[in-house]
Length: 446
Length: 105
Image (spheres, rainbow over the protein chains, first blue to last red):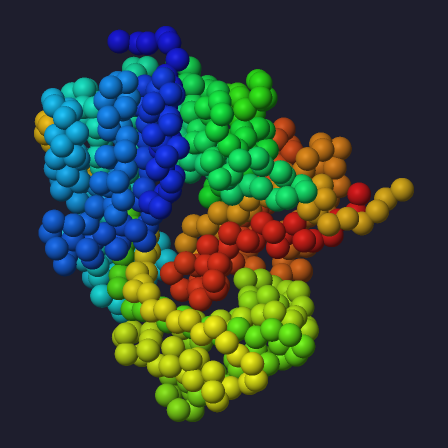
């Protein structure tokens, strides 16, 4: 059935650590047809694989329970379909947990679908070529897992079964939006124009607050009010895929042509060929037009045939990242911090014979942009920051120890030692023929 | 009369990452500055200014109807989130690095 009305789709999360309250506001007051929670980065999924390996009952997104408990009552009461990749490495378990939460909340009969098939670890071997030029076997690190970016196709059975909550693992971010749009408007899987337009909507929406004034403010140049109570976006989508991006009245942030333009090119390479499993979308004809305060119209996207293979992310054990720092302030602070850095370098080499590369930054003088340019030579409130990637936790401890020992053995007036050891995952990309990837949908009811 | 300004005075920008590749979308606020920025803010200028960081090929895509440019910077993330030990492994701050360049308007 082809629909002609407006489809209202909101974003409840743009990454795994996103705020919860804006999503609650949207399901309560947004008059939405659907809300999408995009909570899966390449690295979060790799960590989820590892969690699942340690405990088969885990491997879903860490804030699943908190988000579901907060949004389900209003979502179900108001008929807002929930679409999310919060299943991460374990969509089945995430669906069970969601069902249990629904029951605890007294929401009976809720239909929860989960989609599997993105985990293609079994189909990847030592000879699998990676986009980076080597094979899996040549990486020289322990293989953790591989997952395919599924497309909107994978969500269609759940939508056709009228599931109220759809939980997936890895799905291309815009496809989480394209699927409900395609289902609602009856777009065919080869309506490239509509799929391209829907992909632009999904691309603009997928980072939640990044289109409503988040990741944008630059005081004095780009002022944004109310970032502490930032509203998340709504797209009012028309049958041809054109849309108005807006947000709820009374929320912080702003939607204007500048926020939309910045997000249009976010993580985009060739704007005429934005590839997803659904379509090769063309952003070059997109028109962005202010309709009213906090209302921006989007139109003019195009699209051509979808790629023939799926993109994979292949994850490996990256060992550990050790980080440690000490601060210096007052006259001569930068020189003292730089001396401290040279001491650490000398000791990691001469005493510990460490062959892992060590990075030394002087926060406040030369850190994020240290490779490109130097902002200060005599900064007076700085922090030495040392970082190293190593294979074992024991090796990581060595760096922390050396930096901490600066307190007594290093330059004058060093204080505020902190150190941390973070497990690391390294990811690369690969391709897999479509016929080797099979999405499966299961439905359970609360 | 022409004058030299920081790009930040006339444009805004946002960075994103994919692997060891960074992209920075740059938009002039006022379309009357588009031609001047187009002529000066080239891949060569970025390479000349920050070649030690932007070590790979730089491609510039133009979106004149949006007053925008998309810079795609290969091998510009010190290895990318996977390998980089930069606190900003995603290069989120590369937008501000570029806005700190001077152009003549």
